[in-house]
Structure formats: C-alpha cells, structure tokens
Length: 121
Image (tube, rainbow, N blue to C red; front, side, top):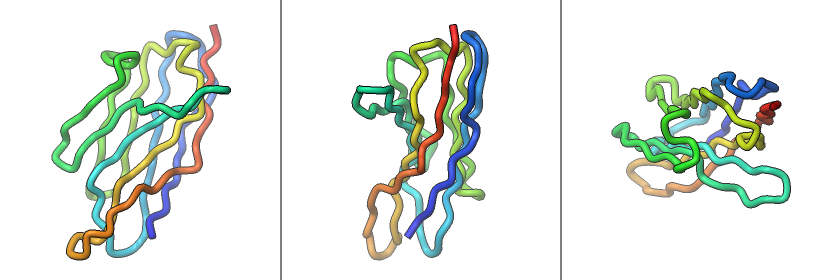
C-alpha cells in the first residue's frame, strides 16, 4: 500500500504562483509514474501533467509553458510549480502515482486526497 499526502494549494490572484507537493510513503514499492490531475466543479477530472521514472514529462496544452512537474526519487515526492495562474486553473488538484512491487509487478494507481487551488481575477 502507498499513501499520498498533498500540500501547497490555496488562494492566489491571477498571475500569481503556487507550488504543489505530493509525498508518497509505504513499504516495498517502486513508483513508475507520477502525475497531477485536476477537477473543476461540475467537470471531469483531467490530466494536467505527468512525469515518468526517467524524467520524461507530458503536459496538457492548457498549462504548457506555465506549469512544471518534477520529482525527487530519493524522497518519493513530486512537485508542480504553477506560474502565471489564471482563474480557469481553479480546481481541486489530485496527485496520482502508479506504483507497485518491482519483482511482483502489481502496479496500480494511488490517489492523493486533493488540494484546492483557487485563482481570483
């Protein structure tokens, strides 16, 4: 089992910045993929950014050039630096990891509890 704890959300004015963190803990696991999703009121949860174990990244078009995902493998922690925030970035942000036991291969998705990001105009 893997537990995820998110932090860093809050209220910010348009044009401002926030940094989200998501720390994974547990025993005997390897993280293959880390990602951030967001869900605005009345909308489906959507992928914002993801990063593989080798550091390859992928971003939603709406955040390219403004958000940066990173990871610290030694700390099992992922981050997302969000700059030039817009009101349309307002959502609950969830971290997700794909993790499992390397030699058994029981990889699955684990989700954080979510953190609210509100961008005022």
